Image (cartoon, rainbow, N blue to C red; front, side):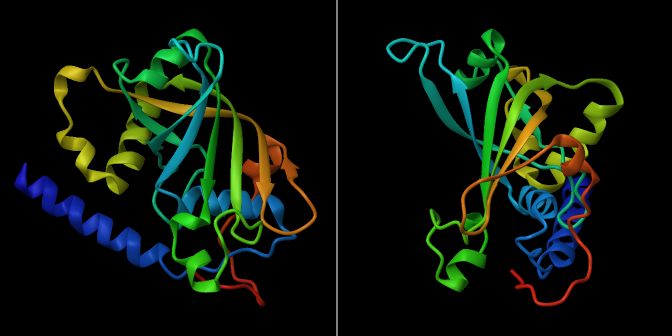
Length: 204
């Protein structure tokens, strides 16, 4: 176990080193920006439709750790580590539709540039779709993605029946500049390459 922890710590350090100084895509490249922000963020605010009184039927937002893979090398698919004991997961059992919101406010980028978290210049992305459990080989992918960036998960209580899940994305909403929200289809989103050399962009 100690050896596994040591190796994991080394992997986390390497991931941080590789992903720490990558450039923010130009705001004109909307799909790339969406992929970039999702990969840079370690957690998301997930909104579900509540099944619990006294807010039954109303939107309910909760924070969840996510990972689409190593920083600098993500797949675009946000994976989650969930338990049915969690209140929002109980909502998903009734209605799997949800939205995930992520923001560069999680990083030093917005603070370093003097951007308020609500400013469109502090890029934030909203993913709409459904949250579904993953099994087999994809569960192994999810485990590697999550545990490399959230090593504490390894020690979470085993009696909570944890399982891996992902967001099946049906729409991507991007707020990264003035002029209103922009939308990206799942096809455009997954086709985008979030990290590549370009001039005239900021770094985190």
